[in-house]
Image 1: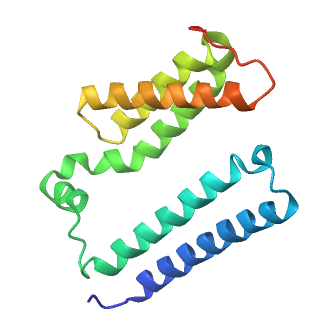
Image 2 (image 1 turned 180 degrees about the vertical axis):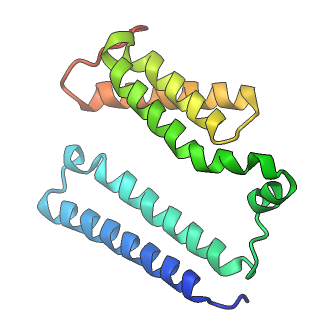
Length: 159
C-alpha cells in the first residue's frame, strides 16, 4: 500500500466530489422523470463519470510515491520532448475550435471522424488502424444515436 500524501488526498477528495455530483445529478434526473428520453444522455454519462473516477482513484492508491509512470520515464529520457505536454492542450483546444467551425460547412459525420482521429493522434496513439476503426465506430454510434434521439436535422455529408 502506498503512503497517502497531501496531493493524493486532494486528488481523491476532488474525485469524490465529482462522483457525488454525478450520482446526485443522475438521482435528481431519475426523480424528475423515468422516461427514457430524459435519461438517455444523463445516465450513461453520469455512470461513465463515476466509473472513470473510481478507476482513477484506484490508480492513485496503487501508484508509488515517485512518479514512475511511462510518461514520466519518457520525459526523463527525452528532455527535448518536454515541450509537447505543455502545448498539447492548446492543440486540442484548436481542434475543438476547428470542429465547431467546420461542423455545418463539412458535415457532422466527416468532422466528427476527423476530430476523433486527430485527437487520438495528438494524445499519442500511433496505431493507425486502431485510430481509424475507433474513429469510424465512434462516429457511426454518435450519428446513429443523434438521429434516433433528436428531432432536429443533423447536417451530414454521407447521409
